[in-house]
Length: 545
Image (cartoon, rainbow, N blue to C red; front, top):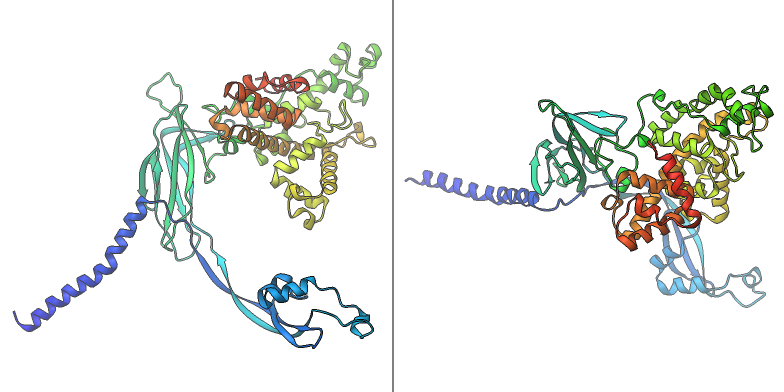
């Protein structure tokens, strides 16, 4: 073989070795990544910002000699932390402990000043680079082959259900290169999206972990989901369908049942019971229950003429007698359904079940949104000071909307928990008044516009109660509520929290757990003692089908 051929062979060998030094580690990294926990987001960039640099000198009082130069990026004197950082601990300690220099000392009429003093000597425009965290990649979750039913908050699939995982890369010129994860213990990997067939689980659930890798060189966070797939009962074996429920922060499909994600608790297969649903139409909330207290108010306000009835159609306590009830029948039905459209609108916006809201108003006020039996309880849902406290503390998103309407943004910025007691009380009073539609100078003695607004307040109060009830269960047991009790029972616990307060709920949950290590409505309700026991009838009345 001549020299030229040897040179060409040797060149090929060297090129192969050289390429392998770069290619083989890359292959190893990909393989390793697919087997390990994802590294997570790691993306920052530097941006240049302009500012004014202020130069200060620290000088000694006794000889005016400069002992330290400080450069700060804000108006006003350097902070103690800046003095410590730029002048050292000794200067900082002397400056911190020294007594202020008086005019008499300054003009030598008293002993000379001790320690140090500061004065500004220069200010110049300046620039610096700061690190900015960039948006990470994410993965969104949906199901395919399903149509959502808004009345049940679940998905009905007429085709074999699949879990759809879709990656999203927010940075321009970058892309999702793969999605990986573990479904019910089995690893998977796909590109650019995953369409995973789901096994039938019945009443049980399976867990899914998933993440995305980006061309940027990092990954998304590790996300989780709980999935349940149950077959729909059907007499025709050729017409199969499945209920599919998913709990995940990354879920973008049919809205999940209220508080299910917070409790990590699935509603019953096929959706919640009727008293916990939100129908598609306000007409589906209509009721025709004969309410004596409501009828009495309609008679007293002249909306119903019961003058031909004994005692004007009223009993001594103010409710309607039998004749008054007959006279008010049509008006009672119309009035109790007059809030349905607004209830549905609020339920759709907030996620609080519409039927639960309606049942709650029926029990609390019979839809008369003024003062019922206690002047400290107001509105359609009879909000109290304690109820307002629950709402503001356990529903941060509502607090963030409501607080700046009453107090300054600065006062509100640290949250309800960190406010002083005076501001907390002021906020609670304001919230209770916002729920109160009593208005002596208004027609019928009510501000019905205020009553409509208050429905939003009560929806958020219910959601706050569901959050607090979940926390009670976690604090007592150390476990997620969904591991111990059903979705419907958790809502019953929330109603105890709403009407009797968290103290009653906590004591009953703790007793039930200590005695039996079982949490459901039966075990908790039998441990509601003393005045707390009144919550049992309250919950069972609201929760009846």
